[in-house]
Amino acid sequence: MNVPRTRSECEQLDEADPLRQLRDEFVLPDGVVYLDGNSLGALPRRARARVREMVDVEWGQGLIRSWNEAGWFDLPLTLGDRLAPLIGAGSGEVVVCDSTSVNLFKVFTAALGMRPGRKVVVAEAGSFPTDLYVMEGATGLLEGYERRLIGDGQPGLDDVLDDDVAVVVLSHVDYRTGRLHDMAAVTEQVHRHGALVVWDLCHSVGALPVHLEDCAADFAVGCTYKYLNGGPGAPAFAFVATKHQNEARQPLSGWHGHADPFAFVGGYEPAPGIGRFRAGTPQLLSYAPLQASLDVWDRVDLAELRAKSEALTELFIALVDRECAEHGVEVVSPRDARERGSQVALRHADGYPVMQALIERGIIGDFRAPDLLRFGFTPLYVGFTDVWDAVQVLREVLATQAWRDERYQVRAAVT
Ligand SMILES: *Cc1c(COP(=O)(O)O)cnc(C)c1O
Image: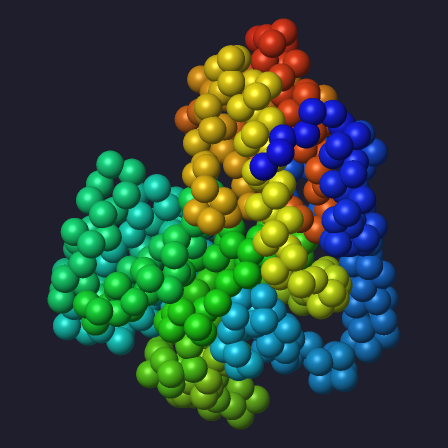
């Protein structure tokens, strides 16, 4: 790319941006460049009215009637259908409920049950830890499973796949480096060995187009509070390919996943289709902001989203190379945009205090141990000028070593 030499060149890029109007849909505090939408998306303006409506009208006035009249009971499925196009899924393939960790437990265990003779599970050594923890918990309830780790100094996927492998769990986009898997190729590779694959989409949903059906994916999970802007604690989703739905049995067999929940019978019979991946009463209030954020997503062209995301991360990398390389930061994310999600990670030996100094100056990213500065570029509300401003502040913090100040060294619980 032609790397801009001035801020006004970045302003021109913002003016030509087809997604630019969408920024007005979000509440963004003055003086802040928000590059952490990959951890917690910004507040959609219309979410406030929707939350008020759910509380004051549906709960306050509708009371118990709202389970039927406001469509509360079906929300996990109706929102699943609304979310489906964002991940290339069909109608009746997605349910919105619980957390990513809980949904991973459900689909991973269901997948194991579909490959009963096989006793090996495969995970990435660099996975977001909850994925490893949940797999450990699930296989710990069963007998005789072996885990094979791949990546990060371990063997590659090709080296560990054989006819003993039941299930492979992979992050579509790596939460630290932003490295993007080729979902179609990897899914095919796993299927060649007769195994099933679970995709974790936490860092790809809303960051780039995802094509679960076209890739013949089996299962997927993801959260809605990152790039989708569904709000803190927003419900997660689970995808189960139609062809697997009636064979898959998930172990959290609560009443909302029952074929006839209001029959109140003693024995469990799973609902047909994706509904069996529900467990109990959904956290209704947390669905309201997600509904509002999906109204915004209805207006987004995912090809435009991806093009802007690539341009933003490309610009950030180019500016960091030019302005900051001599100050001890190194780009860790793939340099080829086709192999990258919508985030860029930089390595710096004192990453934690550097990030604290940035945050105090209004540039909000985050830190991932041991030494990564992570910046997320949410195409709906981050502009090219924001990228310019962020790199200028980063250069200043590094060049002046402002991060050495004592107050930046104190670790908070959430980094
Ligand atoms: C954010 C994230 C999660 C979060 O799981 P929760 O159950 O919502 O806490 C899981 N996996 C990955 C890859 C993530 O990035």
